[in-house]
Length: 98
Picture 1 (cartoon, rainbow, N blue to C red):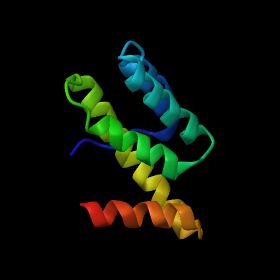
Picture 2: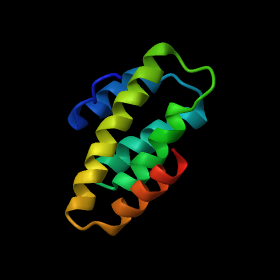
Picture 3: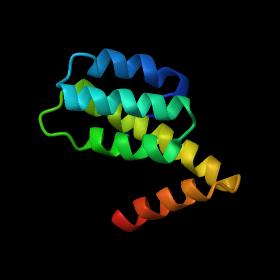
């Protein structure tokens, strides 16, 4: 299992890895970064799940998506611990689909 990426590193790393991706993929990556910056972790989590399951992504993109997912999951868990109901719901959905 790769180590999580620090949340503050995700925007720059996503730009490097997905900057030249096909438009729908790039838009999803950009939306994930925007959600992360707004602290909308459930939305960021949904987008990072999409990025983790792309067919034909590069090894670098796959590793970055996995490391970002770990970071966003940690942020969701912290938000849930603070009483964020949306974060709790997102985690519940994740756990039910594992």
